[in-house]
Image (cartoon, rainbow, N blue to C red; front, side):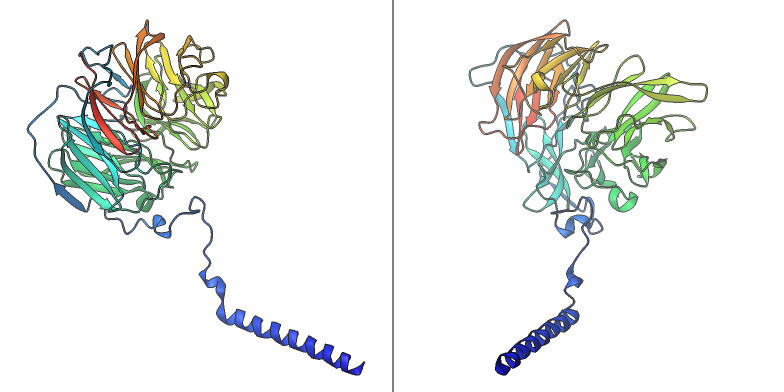
Length: 477
């Protein structure tokens, strides 16, 4: 009995000593030194993705060839010349395609992404991501042959996040302006590729990287680049020749950068830059002594994810849409004795009215064309047309047998080109602006995936892409 008691005491002492030794080792080792706080938006991302200081924007340049050619048309930015995704080209469009589809003029490989092209003076501009060297690359190609002419690039680490590249360059006769996936602004000479100036919106302005990276397409208005930030400033105006900050818009509500792009319009005779931020909708003065100042704002419509841009009607209204259950809304801008006021006059779910998840609807005359999102009930993924006065009841739909995804669409005269997720191209003929008849369809890439990048069109040539390839096809007569 005594032996059992002694043995129990020895065992207890041994356990206590063991715990004491382990605790002392724990204090000396201090394993918590290696722990890092979990930061919002940084989950599952390499540490280097949060370090913008090491990026030297526009550091490298390569020239491959020169061309002496031009084009009569131009598609110099997101949604074309007039920001409406409608071409005014006078070349007739073929209503029938050969068995093999419209002829492919050239094809090039790209890094994974959804960045669409801009076209100006015989050149095609694309902000690509080169996965081999891990770099954002402004790549410039011959419009006629697809031959690469030059590229300006800089090293930056990007991981796959539903694609990598997303935004479209803006091109003028003098400069080409890009906004990279991690908020890097690069302005280069259109012809020579010379780097003129750059900005890092995260490092310089405290911008917060949007989910799935930046998709905003920069706006050039006259000689000013208008860039939405959502950091310590809501937006800035930058001289495109010098990079000098011309004006800054405060951000007292701490609204965040969305995937939407800034557009310019006029309300009650006042030029206004409109931005759909994460937090609300804002109108910023685009002229006069108060340029850069907030004219009006509203948080009555503030979805957490916004990819589309605003659509403006002719009666001082904005029509806004997005996916993820938020649907659509109508906001009216009123002129008051002291300034302006934005009032939400209509709001509906995607099941109850016009909506769009990724592509901005097209306003043609008094009719709006959209592809309703996947959560739109019976109208999910259908091409639909609505009169601008009634966003609830469509005047025409493509029907349940003709459903599409997140792909782009544009109008050329009375023809609509539409690309679905799997890179199948559809040609519709529009009648009286409010109904459509399917004329032709053809799968551009046999194994096309995520063909979401906006298309561009000039001179009878349509340039489009899937997640890894871009082609030029001839669709004229």
